[in-house]
Image (cartoon, rainbow, N blue to C red; front, side, top):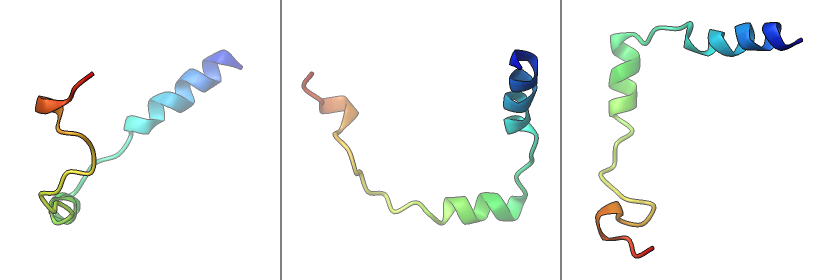
Length: 43
């Protein structure tokens, strides 16, 4: 049902990140690009 799906989709925002979670995510940064440079991309 459409309304149930809307409610289900809204639950994606029903969480909080702890300071430990943020530190773990910050630790994933490798200062490396895996795609084209958006400042110098030739469309």
